[in-house]
Image (cartoon, rainbow, N blue to C red; front, side):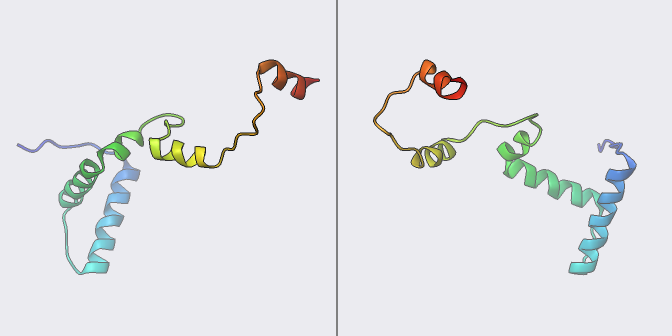
Length: 91
């Protein structure tokens, strides 16, 4: 049994635009239900990215991103502590 989904006018309009563009580019007439099903399928296939798109603010870096960042750091051989940083910044 299908459940009716309510959506705001802007979302409905954008869905209709997608439907028209699919018809224009492919010559295939698809229903809005088919479009929604394809969108859900796509979201499930890239579940992590989809879920992360709902996070507020920044997301944690992946291990690969951390490794890439660390590739750019070098060691000067000098140990620096908080007091050193404060002295440099604030005199």
